[in-house]
Image 1 (spheres, rainbow, N blue to C red):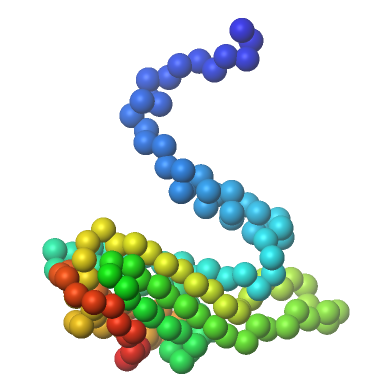
Image 2 (cartoon, rainbow, N blue to C red; image 1 turned 180 degrees about the horizontal axis):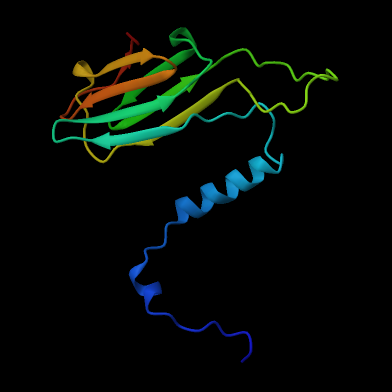
Length: 144
């Protein structure tokens, strides 16, 4: 009986978010150096307006030529490929954390997308994608 956890009413009001728990674990592993080196994932925000979905991805160090965006139905895939910066063994280097390389992120959006009207822009290391809501077929986007 000593191992029982006391019941708290607030536990009923809080929603369990397994994705947040997974990301917390992944970040802890990354901080401890247990994730493979060269593995990169950009931070991404997905917003929704009545007319469209708006996706913003932080991709510092990548040029728009290093990025690829694909739409297939309501699935958005963002890919990036950049030359991996070599790890330095210089005695002057105190700490090295910056990594570049390949990444691939895919998201299933909750509604249909009008792929013909989709647009993508890239400025100051931020990729911004506007995906109007509707029906249609997939296509590859050009980054403006």
